[in-house]
Image (cartoon, rainbow, N blue to C red; front, side, top):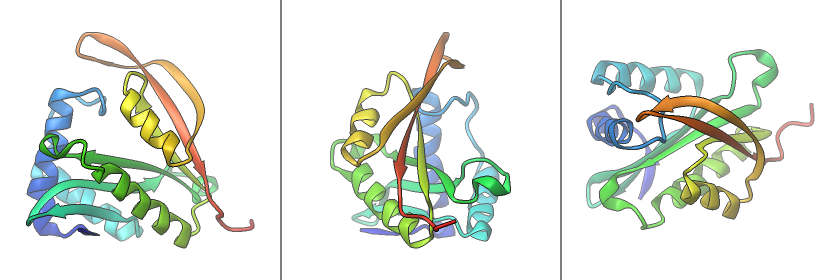
Length: 166
């Protein structure tokens, strides 16, 4: 079941996110996030009207997704960058795709013009999943990050939505 995230979900959301930090190149961050940091993130996104979704399975948060403005300037107000994370015990169940479909629906209703994905260049699974959803390759920043002793390329994909006329 997909629903809006609540404060009570934050410990499970944090556990998913911190595991991603420690075990993958999906986030170019080294240190785990604290519960206080995650609460601040939650309240900032709520205040901005950004969707915060969780996928709940048998009472457990199996994944979460959100988007927020791509850059903090007025000219970007209709361009959003999204994130989707799934608990490692729930991979290959289609959870990320279901969360993405819901995010895309919300983005259309909120007047988003462009939805952006920043993906580690080696994450072929995420790249293919985004292409299946209609995202198009938009460019690569070579050596954009450094993690686990290697330089990492960041690829961008974008989905064109209806958005406002102007």
